[in-house]
Length: 262
Image (cartoon, rainbow, N blue to C red; front, side, top):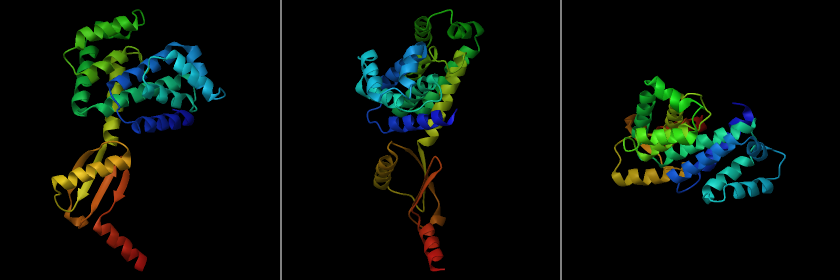
């Protein structure tokens, strides 16, 4: 991934996670935007052109996606005003944040990942089914209907939405590979959404609730807390989220005070 696309993708992810009320509907509309860009070279070129005026791009988005909800259009307008290394990168980034939107609204990421793995295994072990879902000989809508027949009622709505989107994706040629990539993106999101917390002694339910709220405010999204008891820190709280450390422990404060005195 080239530098400009990497930076723009990161900015778009941060924009998504700053939104409230992220739900399955938003994810599906982001997928629709991504698919429209993938299928139209003219639209891709226009919206990813860094020399085009922002107002003109936003007018096109409002016109082409008139029925879309405000959040989806806001995110697409934000993406259109970022710099992309190639026209297709913007579509790929919208697909990525669609997957992350599904992960963000999920209350059971482990279940979602397990269901995606199940879908991948079913398809990859049936060569004829894999070919049918991967070939360009059939329309994406026909392949979506097949996905519905195969998995509706057997997996939850979020996993089904990802399987439906996978038939449109240009991430990989094979359906099972696309599902695998979605699983990797969700695993990446899950890692970013877990706070590893160290405390010197067990904390009460009320303290835990306050900590959850404080961390959600600090990081802009609700985090899953993995709490570890470590008497060596003496007191306070040590939090790590995706490599970012917030250290308010007594032992660290003592060490820092000692260093300042030396």
